[in-house]
Image (cartoon, rainbow, N blue to C red; front, top):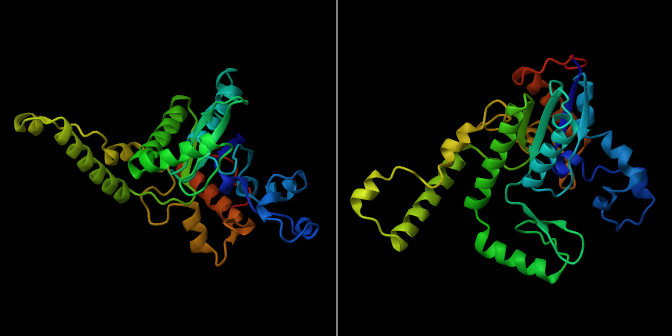
Length: 295
């Protein structure tokens, strides 16, 4: 069987900053290299040099790349589920050939559908980058960062996004693999955040909603137990879960002297990641595609 890989993620899957040098030479040197990411004249050069293309040298497969730069995990999740639903589940087509591969981005990112007098659009929020179309969005960003943005909030989203995709794939008999592009998350981090957050919640409830000692001794339920929910994320379907090298970024740093172009992986980094994903799929995800070139 020839498998179809449904790939999604942010700029690290899209291939940002991979630009044809001949194209750059035609334009003023002050033009930011990232401005070429969306130009038609650079599409072929970029898409031929990213891991979703290189992987076809190591596996007998077709690929679909749904990624888009600067996306947050909620958007990546929604687009993945929507594509599979529209193309396969709703029409009643078999999912046997599918392998979903998602490269999660930083959990700190978030987004909402923003409604104003124009067409609704996806309003992205990063903690340290300003994406504003109007003063109202800037004011919302300031309030969100000041009062709502914190590890407890975005780690809850990250774990739940993983579990949502996992359960969707299992329910629809779809092979899948997820990984973190550049944000290292291990159980030791999850446990630390869980302890800090639980203590903060307990302190708040003891201040505003005092309960007597007899009741508190029997209250076993924690508001969030990230350690337990993190353990629900299946390994090995989450790449190198809780291992020392567990992200795309760590892998290319370990195996290449200079893996970047600007702030993104260069073509050689994409190539070795494609080979690693192919190896991992065949070793761990019951991928039985033809081995065309794996050495």
